[in-house]
Image (tube, rainbow, N blue to C red; front, side, top):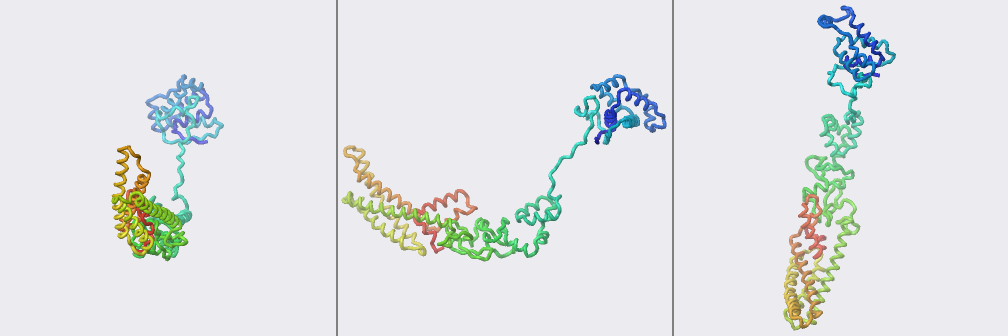
Length: 447
């Protein structure tokens, strides 16, 4: 059992552990005071010449024997004694002790530094244990170099870059020269080809990396995300791009990303999931197209049946009925090679303008009947107003959609990572009008 204390506290603790009584402690102290002069050092002789060493006070002895709080006075008395006195008392107590207590002394402390919990029940300082060092987790640099090399070899380049920023040791251990030696020259070049030069993203099969020559080779390839953020001109709808694995793929017409994996079965220019979404958009477009055509026919029939003699209703409605067939033929036969959006825009704008007069005249009739209240509004009048209004709404949507198509927008920008939220919202609104008007524009071969 080992403890650490200053000399005075260690002597008192040893005296206590030896089991000395009060009378034995007094005898030891008197024996020390009667030491010959040749047993004292020169400095202690000078101290004893001027001062007389008095025995321990009886009150102190009584308090120490009883283990009361007065036992602390013994420590005070020993702290004031000379070094030879304290050492002799320690040796005397150790000779009579049967215990194996070992006291290791450190630099002496001031009496004011002694805490209450360091004093035992008998008033003597308890055995003071040295402060234990704080347990800290082992550092990464404490591992053997072989283990560190095995860890670094399995790290990605992005992690290695962050690792080199931690300390100088790891900065040198993960240097490009050490990495080349660790992996080998050929394998290291292969690893560089599998990483993006911008974000250091790793792709083992290199299907998500675009082949890029120029400076920095073999670390010259670029991932698809970084190419989209930088608006690489090679990534454009209707073109093929060359990947880092030396394969050429199309750019998806729905999302604008190269079709590197999961292509559609019936179209290599779409991802499988994108092609299913495109087919749903086409289905909704055909349903809405037939509704427009049916509403146009119903509007012409109502004008022919109930408003034949009203020129503000019958003439424009019949004209719109004829133009409707022209627009339908244009949508069906124009295909995906010729852009006829300008012609369709002009026709839809004319149809929209022609519907203004019938809607205004019928709504005026309804208002007059409601104001007089003599004759209720006929059901045919209500039906004509609803059908004319729906035709006007559909024409308005087609006008806006064809107007947007005149500028040949790149709708795939709505899915690019670098686009802000408000621009993404504008692109989605534009997609709504275009998919309502003519979603086949995605398949147009003219870019």
